[in-house]
Structure formats: C-alpha cells, structure tokens
Image 1 (tube, rainbow, N blue to C red):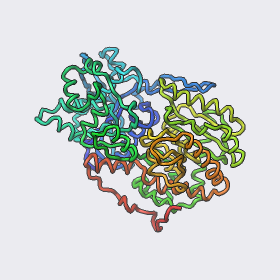
Image 2 (tube, rainbow, N blue to C red; image 1 turned 180 degrees about the vertical axis):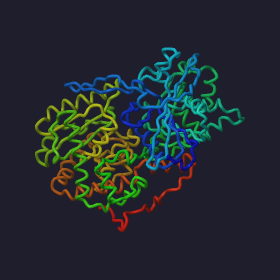
Image 3 (tube, rainbow, N blue to C red; image 1 turned 30 degrees about the vertical axis):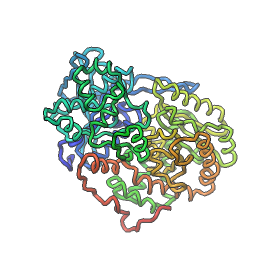
Length: 580
C-alpha cells in the first residue's frame, strides 16, 4: 500500500510549464522539465506531500529529424493522453479574454521507492464547447506567438489554483518553477479577502529562477496583458510588483510575490542578484534523481557495495571503496549500450576501446555544443598522437532558433571532414531515455557553455552518477563540483566571463596532454577519477539533497533524514575510504 509519511494532503503545489514524468509522455522540452520531474521523483522517495501542476501538450514539443546536410526538421508529436493518463471528472472553468474556458484535468502518479505517491496534474483546454482558439491553448510546448504563450501561462497560473480547489486540495505553499506560472499570485490574491491579502500571497509563495540572461525571462506588452486580463488585473499586477518598464515581467512578478526566492547554483545566485538587485536571492543547487539516471550495470554495482544507496544518496560518498576493476566492468556495460544506440540511430562505427566524448544539450548558440570541433586539424593530430577519439552529440534546437540549428548543421559538416580520423555522430531525437544512455556510456562528458549563461546544468551530474568525469567550463554546478584532476577537468579559469580563444585552447590542451594519455596509458588513474566523480560529485548533486534543502529553507517542512547527511551510513563491515 502507498504510504504518505507526512500525510496525504499536499502541503506544496509545484507549478512548472513542463514536467518530464517519463520518456513516453511528451510533456517536456529539456532541462527545466527534467529537473521538475526529478524534483517530484525525489518528493515521492522522501514522502514529501506535494502535487505537481503543468499543462497537457497534445502535440508535445516536436519530433526531430535530420537530413543529410544536418538540417533539423520538426514533426508534430502524435500521442493519446488516454493511454497514459487518468482523466478526472472534475471540470474547471475560468474566464480569459472575455470568454469562459473549460479545463479538463488529467492525472499521473509518481511512485517513490517506498511507495509514497505524488500526483501530477495536467491541464487541458482541448475540450468540446471551448472556442477553437481556446482549444488550441494547450496544443504545443513553447509554440506560437507571444499572445499564445501568455494564454498558456494564464491557464497554468490562473487555472491551476482553481483546479486544486475543485479537487479539494489546499496546499500551504505554492512553488513557481520559473516565471511561467507567476500569474498564480494573481489567483491567490483574488481568493483572499483579508485586509493583508498581498502579504498573504507572499507568505504562500516560493520562486525558483533558472535563467541567467535577461532575454530568457518572459515579458509581455501591457496592451496584450490588459486585453487578456482586464483593468482590475492591471492594478493588482502593478501592486504585486509584476509591471516593470511598462511590461509584465513574469520573473519580477514571481519574485516580488514570494517569501523565498532562489537560483540554482552559487554562481547563478550572483548573476541573478545583479539582474534583480532589489531581491534577496538564495541558492539551492540543482540535483538529479539517482534511481532514474543511474545505468543498470552501475546500479547493480552500487547494490553490491552500497546497500540502500537509493534511499540515502549521500552514502555514494563511500564509492571510494569500490574496486576499480568492478567499476570498469560496470562502465563498459554502459558504454556498450551507448555504442548500440549510436550505431542504430546514426550508423557510425563506434568502437568499445576508443576514448568516447559525450556532449548533449538543448542546442542553443550560447551552449556552444560545437566548440569541441572548432579546430578539426588539431583533433586529427590529437587522434594520431594521443590515441583514437570518437564523439557523440545530441540535442534539439527550438524551431525558431536559427543559430541553434546552425550549430547542428556545422557539427554534421565538420564530421564529414573528420571521417577516417575522428568518428563523430549526432544522435537525433534527444530524450530522457537517450540522455540516460549517453551520460552513462561516455568516457568523458564535455560541456562548454558561454559564461555566465549556465545557470546550473545537470547533464554532468548524471554523468558523474555513473562514474563519468567532466571536462567543463567553470560555470553553474561545475564551479562547485570541480576538483582538478580528481572529479574531472576545467576548461579555462573561474573568471565570470568567457574568453573564447583561451577556452578553446584549454579544451584541446587538456584532451591531448592529460586526458587521452591517461585514458590509454594509465587506465587505473583514469578509473580513480571515475570513482572520485561518484564519491564527491554524485553523492552531493542529487535531487534528494536538493529537496531536503527546499524542505528546510523554502517549504518549512521538517524532514527527518533516514541517516545523517553529515555522516552517511557506509558499507556494512567496512571503514569508509578516502577518495583516490
């Protein structure tokens, strides 16, 4: 039977524009949605009384196909919510743009390792009787013009609290995961008749920002907002602090209406504080859900040496006692899965004994996914002198992002020029399932965003969980997880702004002079780095630790840990060993 350790009534409502529940549900685009899913999976494991609220996208994000030139093409996703979700017979109505809209609620349970269940509610406007324009509101994730986006965010932020009330749920805390849901502050304000209703809203809300660049924060013209929400809403939004420079700024609205605001890494908190100097910005660094992202072979290794690791992730600290040959065997099994995926999807002749570099992200220009290929001649020389190299890329570019699409095309063109010297593959249709295979099977995870535009990053955390070290720019989480030559290697220095020539040079220098020689000539030394990546990085950068911090600092929930996070339980009968 499911157990609700802290009671069945949800105390926290977690609102997110996208939530990656599982691979088969096309309700997410990338890192934000995957992080949201990991947040709720950790809540289910820890018995935290939460409910997730998001939208149901009948056309998902998009299917990605690549032609022979590396040009990305998009196709609508076809799926049936009836096959994967439970429909709730609780109709919800709201007014928007002068029309009445009916919202259907779908539900999916996330079940934790001990049986506790967290519900995720999906709001759907494709309902008979709705105006055709309103039926299309929840059609596709991040699609359409700004007015369409504002309508989506209104359904999430204004319709979500109504849905919770109709279901008889009365959470004490509303957590806004990014600014997309910030209109829920308006819904809470209107539901409160006290003399201090603005203060009451702030006492109920917490806000997390993931965006380190001004362009990434949703803003809408006042005329558009007025036309959709009306006169009264404009006055209320102004008092809530959401109207900035004659625009509705969704991030400012969420921040100014919350009792607790956090960024998702220490550096990101610094960047965000500079962008919003009037706000107090805390920091809770992201983490990944260990049971979801560990490869089967690595999970079996942990089960043998670290019983209960999935319950208390901090016990991964004692991975330092795992014998290197066993870790190598587990990694090779994960690498074979990667090679099988690459061969199936691309036909590239990847080899099990070759140093394999992985680089997979949402393909936006600032993430510089192709920096690794910026000097093809040097890569050729490196492969000849230090040992063979193969590189696997993956990632989707937003349909309107020409720069991101150009990155994918350049990778394809460069790959053709390197044929016979360095094998390069681009795996299409990046997904949760493929991310898990790539992060676990690579020998080295490469991440080279332009600083300071990496808020946190989680792909390197997933890699570390599987004993894959990172070669990464010192931004986001890697500033906190990097120990040079111990958990991986840095690209460039720790100054807050990128120096592109220096970072490109450092990337190649580390590969040719340190990493490739170690991989081929000193495998035990490379294995020790693998092991330390688990003991030092994977043990900390987990969704369990992240959620415990949210519970303590944002939610004011008292979670009694199953073991002390300072001195986690070690393997029975062994003294914990220090990391190599």
